[in-house]
Image (tube, rainbow, N blue to C red; front, side, top):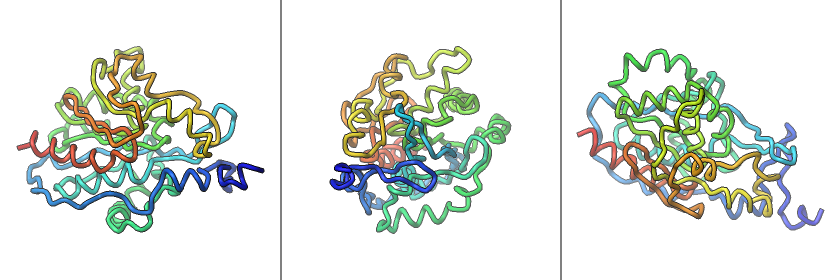
Length: 284
């Protein structure tokens, strides 16, 4: 009751899940992003497609049994997409089974016209994405049309995607075909899919920016999460040989070989810029 009075109690949703508290939303979200609409020289080549893998799952079961209402973070998805679109790239939106993309709509920046614009542009693709298996079946014959794989963050990126064998296949295909992989915050959980079937972690020794487990452990105190995470991410990646470059949930971004990563929602704008600069330079 005291937490509710102080605005620290997570909000109960109609399906029994919890979204962040009033205080958490005030501290961790904004109605406008820092996207600054830079002008890019548009890419004119044939490798203009970005394969974007989104989650289709909404609820994460916390250690205490409560459900966190999650999905892909809209800022982490749409701000990098804004930069890439401005540079001449297009997106193929997929989910593991073709079910609609799930966003953390409680984090949507409703006063950001740029974000609303790209969301509306791809709304039909978010509602009716392609099935990842169908893409896996065709990419070997169309690899010369893709520039990168993009896995946006949000806690929902840890639901199903790290255990999806098709995600592992796509990441290995990107690696073998010299494509870039772009991901941020909890999106690097997707990289764990490369360890399925007892395979060696594809990114052992790579530097990367990832949302810190230490911050996830603190956020239940302000009602961002309704309980502690069922499992950590940054420490798991470290145990497999990844070199996590950030200790805070800040705007850190990192480029190591063909892997482009960001630490948190705060890194979304920087990640978009880094991705565009890197892709345009590599695809000249």
